[in-house]
Amino acid sequence: MKYHLPVYLHSANYAKEFQETIDYRASFQLNLQCRDAICEAIDAHYRNDRLDEAAVREVVEQFGYERTMVVLANTVRMKDWDRRFSPDNRKWVDTIPCPCDMLGERGRQFLADKVHPGLVDLFITQVRKDYKREHKPSVKAALKDNAAQTAAEQNPRKCKEPER
Image (cartoon, rainbow, N blue to C red; front, side):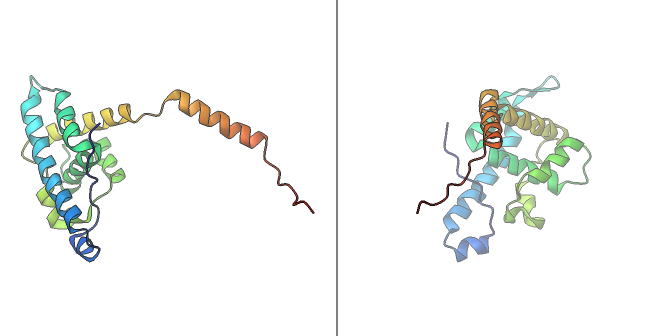
């Protein structure tokens, strides 16, 4: 798996104050590149009223889920009036952190809006589905955690009196 630079969530002023300007600028540029990649992937992979899953894979491989989802969420946030985004996707936006540089009018720079909003909505739905599938906890791990928690509840450890 490729290493992906994390999304920088703070403002340019914060980055300057804490000597993180390089991280801020790198993240800013990657957000712009991700926006363009989303539009290009949709344009390249939408045929016969169908968005090929390769569109999402291309973008996620290059930018990772975090950045892809932040750019997509920003697009929906900035177009909250646009009902071509499904109610589920509009609700999902609230679960995605919003970097400071995407607040207000400045966030318009990061809009994936060179393609139809309905296609962006399809892309978002596919990203969410793929992310959920890849980040689904294994049943075995969940059972093991549940068994450990149950055992701990049934057999609470008693504190020993200090020896005299």
